[in-house]
View 1: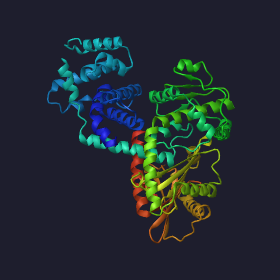
View 2: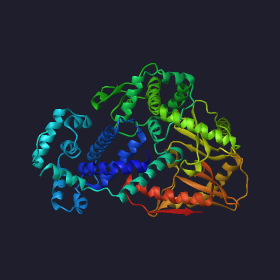
View 3: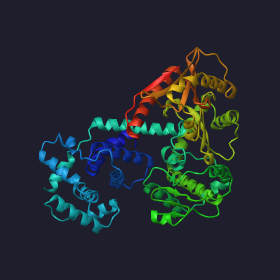
View 4: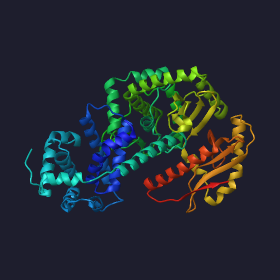
Length: 151
Length: 402
């Protein structure tokens, strides 16, 4: 796959994850770029498209986790710039609440509720147990006051 | 809120076409910078990123001693898979060490690497650990999660330990190469076809290119390649950078001493298109002057560059002009580690010799003044990008010409 193809296909999805994980545009772009570079350089064989996507999400999550540890440039959440163009202003608040979640909880919430992964699949991507995923989802729902049905 | 609110909020995060195009440029620049960094201006000084080289460039089948080849090929498949997984899981791009080598260790490593390449192998295996707590229990080990070699704090490495480290790094390289075996085989098959066409239209063979390069290795550096790893491959016309197109790349890697010798031989007429010598950048850094001292060094550098052309490369011609170029930050900071000296012929064809500030030549290439000056402007942009992203500061770079 060429650089153009990889960026066109995956950057929008990865960018959304990284913005939520990191809370600002600049760091998110760095994380996406690093992820795509790793993808292009590793040239891993994937079983199918879903396997490929899950691998990319895992690498992006790891990158975001490392960046959060050393995050110095943009300590403030800069969601306003991203949500300035939202038609529904309530969504700005929703996104801000999601971004404000603790990182481990945020990752589980994102994979399960946004990307639609089952808890077992999310557990595999995150490298934790299914029970751990369920606990993080429970905490996330509480913090977000989500009105949801259980899986 | 409900799930739909959550999804709509996230789906509103837009990564538009403009941002995607910018990212494509930046990834290309990162890859180009890395490529140049490997061949022309090495970025890593102390810990040679052998694994990084394996990842960033498309590997070739190295020409190595049969004992070494046999050792690598006898690795069980699950061991190779384990090593590959470890590299991919590693949270850093390349291996590093807990401290710098001492001078004594550097010297021993150089000679031990040459012996390793000729079949001197360690008797034991490097200890691998997967937590920092475990690393503290060993004087010498490798932490797999971070890719760090923990070296003894209070003594030098023994010869056996140095050999174990070298052996481990070679196995990592081999595992990466095997991972891409199919890709390498496909690429080699395609290359064979391209070389056949080149030879049919009057060009030289890969063997002839290796012979020519071997001659230059002796003539310019006084070396015969023993104890070093030899690689060679064909660069087709679509390769980047363009100066490498339609050449054979023949290179020697002296891993023990962190020195790399690259030659690009024109595939059609067998002439030397470029050569470069990569080494510990600290040597080049040590002689980099202050901006105020720089202009006083130029005359000597130009003289030594001309000596290099005439005595090492046997190129004796007359030139329309001889110009030097280096880059500075407008805040009076020297940016260039090397000075480029361009010898411009009457017909516009030019020779470029890049010298360290003490006059020693590192790179040579055949170019034109227009091509070089365009590449220089691109390098200035890449430098600005580097400072902004890696060092997080804005710079304004000027080219000083003499």
